[in-house]
Length: 395
Image (cartoon, rainbow, N blue to C red; front, side):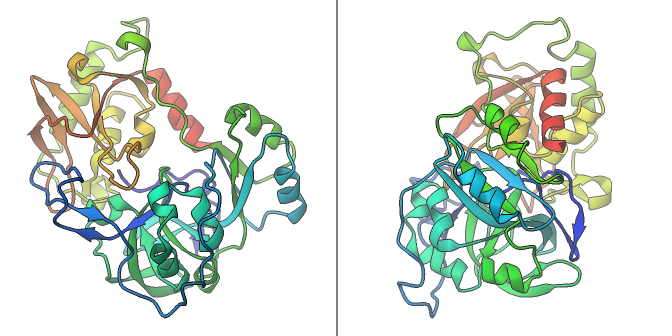
């Protein structure tokens, strides 16, 4: 996975406001001895079981886990959402829960990422079960730590327990990386408490997560836009990936790439061989590429616009079984042990069991043998679906 997509980013207090929020935050500590957690070839095994270190906070400083809710819609604005708007959303038909958070784009450990300020006592209810259950995890966030995404930690090489700069140009602090945290959505790679967010100069309450389990998010968003402030944005959390029945996908008619486009994509990817893996990298200017940045670069050379990160790129076409993969398809994996269904890695299939990939920090863009552990299939890219996915994220 790479750095977050930028979905409309007006500048505010030295950082930029995200127009989407994170869901499914998972914060856990790494150990190197658990065979239950899958790894990629050449990686040490890792176990993610508890927050790092200890805090001076009492066990009651963070409320115990309540009823867990799944967030389906994200809303964010450049400034605080009006209280009456939040209340109207809470009372809307089908809404089971609303969590108000702070959302900006700022610098964390030298990387520009989506950053959220949350109430650990209530936000935990909107996260995956292992994360939600960890009292120590949320006490670390409440005590002033920053929790970073699994990919930023494992692929990006940001060390657990290290002190890193967090904030914008005008407000910046050294915070401890108290945990690895996966957001489960592609835009946010770091989480702090509301108190820490205020100290960093982040806008307060400018975003919210909405749980509408029995309502189609697209239909809900259409109604929601009628009550939102002018500059607020609303998007669905994790739209469905298209797994066609029987693996059948259109063969042509402009629905899939032409043979020439496939050749162009592969040739473009080959020109990046040997370039360093840089978490968040997507161009020569950044000195290298991450897995999804490499895909975005290669497909752009064929005139195909992809979303920025692996989780969104998986929606750029139809997902078929690996056994049906063809050269030019993108292979996808859910390697993140803290979010089993989340697509966290992607590579370009070359055919005959080979792929071209940007693996992780400390490696370079290279040709590898395909491995199938944690693989979720192959994306048969549709230029139209790719453009639609990228356009939806860009709104």
